[in-house]
Amino acid sequence: MSTPSTSRKPYLLAAAVVAGPFAALVWHLADTVGLPRTAAADYLGQVAADRDGYALGTLLYMIFVGSSIPGGLAVMRVLRERAPLAGTISGLLLALSGALGLVVSGMRPVVLGLAPEGGAVAEAVAAYERYQGSAWFGGVMLPMLASVVIGLVTQAAAILRTGVLPRWTAPLLVAGFVLSSGEFNPAVTVAGALVQLAGTLPLAAKLLATTGTESESEPAHAALARG
Image (cartoon, rainbow, N blue to C red; front, top):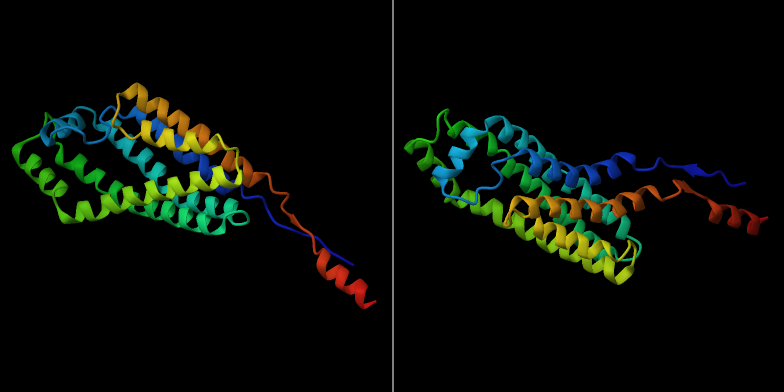
């Protein structure tokens, strides 16, 4: 006689997958400072002018990058049957990028402390420039960027090859990542975050599409054969 064993659907994992790009969307809308694409004095001046927005953006950024850790686990879970190697590579790299991203996000409160009321001063600018030029900064940022790019491309290629998710998901994920990178104007960045969110939803849906029930049919058949 077989007894089905039920397992809970991964609601928390699916929620974490969606929380990342949603947090990124809100971050791009709420944080007027954005990424440090300008000179140190200008950037610290922007931080000082919108300290509350920068603090909120820091929290949202941490949620965004940190969600890559459960996101990587979700990719491994979804691809393990059809593309186990690609799923493992992509999932591990995405999770690594999330861990490194959390390290980078930990410096944002320090940057907030370097931006005094009334604008940046020479000492703060010099300290920020030393931080950006340090080997530590490059040693974290470059592996983080490489991990997320390689992991994302591997994930997209596996989706296109296997069809485990709708194939239109792949170009949305890649396009959303590029457009929301901060290299474009705010409107394009926000649009990219929306595209990335749309590309992530099928992954969360796939996680919840499992029945959550595993039938012990093989042991039952074995028992019948013995009988």
